[in-house]
Amino acid sequence: MPNPDIEKKPEIDWVHLPADTHPQSLWDCLHDAALRTIHSDLLNRTVIMAFDAFYIREYHKLPEGTLFNFLFEGVASARVTTYTMWPGKFAVPKGSSREEEGRLIKEYQSKWREESLSWNEFESLLKKKKTTFDILDTEIVINENHCALQLSGHINDKYHCAIIRASKLTIQRSDGQILVLDDFSMLGQEYWKAFSEGKLRS
Image 1: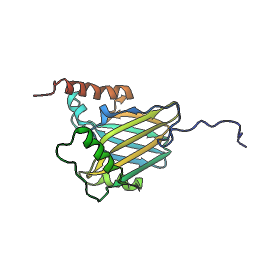
Image 2 (image 1 turned 90 degrees about the vertical axis):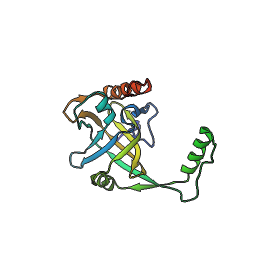
Image 3 (image 1 turned 180 degrees about the vertical axis):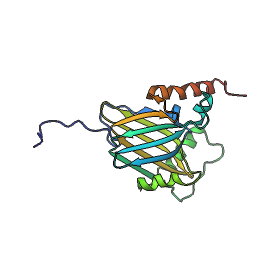
Image 4 (image 1 turned 180 degrees about the horizontal axis):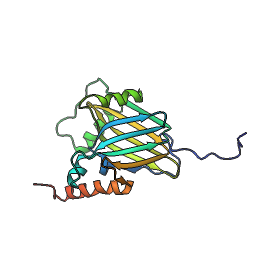
């Protein structure tokens, strides 16, 4: 019988993150990227997400069509939610400051309704021709035994948020090259640094 006196260390989960974990933003390498496909294997407990970070590919002169595959092993949770917009009237008055505009948008979005979506339905959406999950923001949490990834963005102009929890993550380019997370992040950081310095202008 399990010993109730032995404290069980909580697993990583985005809803209740353990106190000793800290989300890491992947904005630099996945903002404006597109999640093109998802493949789940229930028997082997894996999920593969194929991301098209076109600006990284073009800036670093990678082969045409290069994708970045996130391979999750030991998948224990995969879920997604979407939001139905509040149908009431909304407008930002002319002449509003950026701060006031941001406040009004947040107030409007707080009235949206969060709704559940099945993971199979989520995968099926991306199987439709020319349909992608256009990424706005991504965060990840990793410790010795678990990892959790949270993606937010739009599919056909509708906001979605996906969370996946697994025991291991491997990042692999479509040509087979393995990347550690920090190296993948650096590819994006180098692009955005060049962008901010105006080095990408023709």
